[in-house]
Amino acid sequence: MITSDCQTLTKFIIIYILKYNPSNRYFWHQMRDHMKILGSGLLASIGAAGLMLTASVPSQAADASWGCQVLLCAASETPSWHGVPYCVPPMQKLIAAMSLPGFSWPICKEGNAGKPGLEPYEPCPEGWSPTSSDTSSGHGSNSAQNVCTRNLGSCGSKAARDAAKASSEGIATREVYSDSGHNGSSCELIQTQERKVRTKPYYFDIPNSKGVKQRFWFDLNK
Image (cartoon, rainbow, N blue to C red; front, side, top):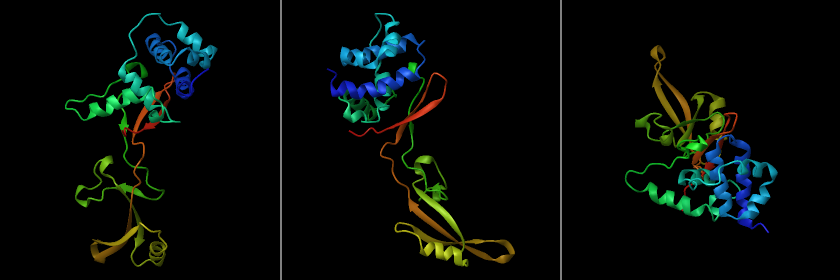
């Protein structure tokens, strides 16, 4: 009988069987090594297509790399890697290594994904733009853009003031004055709100056999 751990890992192993180029023999050997760790039941659960692919690789090769373990486990979504016992050791190893001097991200060259990206915040709502709460830094880097802003229009506009009054809790409105040539100072109503923090801020963009990338989000919480 296939264990629950096997069933869980099977879900995202199948994704890779469908995505990666089966001509990459070394990568497929790594996949077979991962599956063997969880027992023959997992191999049986994948089906004839997966068996045909894994059966074509050489019978002897190096163990799966740490980088490919990280890539596979980061791509597990339901549940996340936290819920897959097989994934906990390599991911905890990664978390510990990140705090050490000279850390270098382990790469799975066969996966063609490179290093992960990092986006700490969710996108701003429609009509809002990301910016920094530190006005001295301007728009800054993406990691510094921790608030969302929008311009309601002229301070004298009834529509702008009505929109400001109707705003939900957590949205701050302020009057911003600027010089406007012969007209003297002008005033605009600017609103800000905190950006939502992502629960899974890291991501891998993994290409399939046609080169189309799919994004997988993950966290590195202990």
